[in-house]
Image (cartoon, rainbow, N blue to C red; front, side):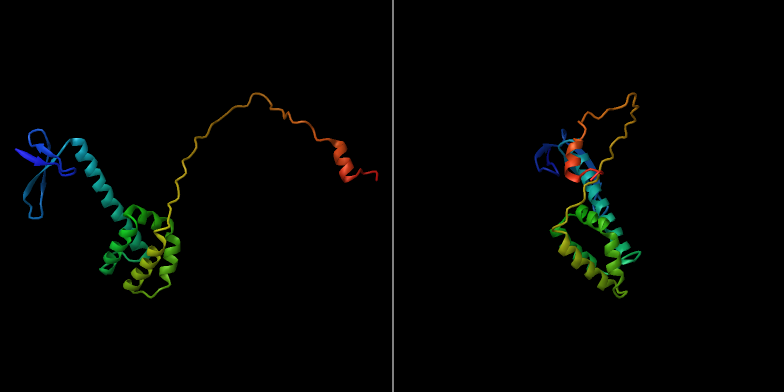
Length: 172
């Protein structure tokens, strides 16, 4: 029997392919085939990371707008527009790095959820395109060094006559 790989679409023999049984929307079992287990695991990890990024963005937006949960559907319409400019990971990094500023700006608005969403959206649309995430600094390992001898500076001493000629001597 023949099937297609879910990721690359390559035709596969069902006996040689990696099989995963999932549930569809109607809770019926569905057989999904992949070229290999590694390909499936990589795809699964990618999907999980996408969900984590989306959850992180949502929780940051809730903090910035000062709500426990956002019920206004305008957020999701605006989010689609943001995703045309940047992916959820970049949006999350922007919100995280500029959280203090965004909180202060949004808190000045009326206490209407729609207004806050639209104002935040305007800021994101204007700034996401040019945003470059800060590079996380890697901690350099601390090295403990015991100094056994004194290091002597081998630079020649400054020419004292030069200073005397330039500044004058105390006698003058």
